[in-house]
View 1 (tube, rainbow, N blue to C red):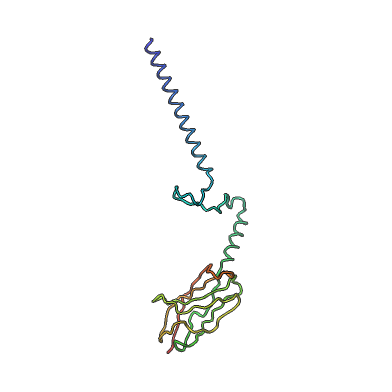
View 2: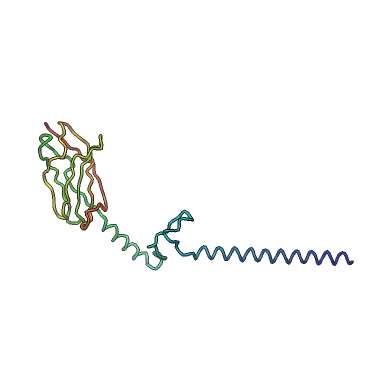
Length: 183
């Protein structure tokens, strides 16, 4: 009977050690998980992890707003960045040096000055670029920056919203146009 008592004591000790080890591993796992979840954003200089966190990011999201408030804020942002483009999509030029009827309009519903450029779709060459067009203004006639031979040219008119302070491009929209040079 003495052998069985030693074996039972040994088994009990192993079970107790296994339970204590499991509890320690579980505690360490929970501690590590909580620490990682609550870890603050790292400095921009910390490149050890391979990721650089934005220092201007703050905790939070849309969770404190109602769906109606979220929709309103998103619609305001969309409206702010909208680009209403308006121009003659088939400008006509008597010859490669003449002014054509481009009729570019920066509609008064826009929020920013615009700059417009025409780019040939076949070559990628920029053939016209306006200067800044104030909101509520238009360019009725203009000559191209490049003298083109007679023919029809498919182009893309790129409308750029410009920051009124710096002149930097803050948004772009494009439309396909057909330019005709008669002679």
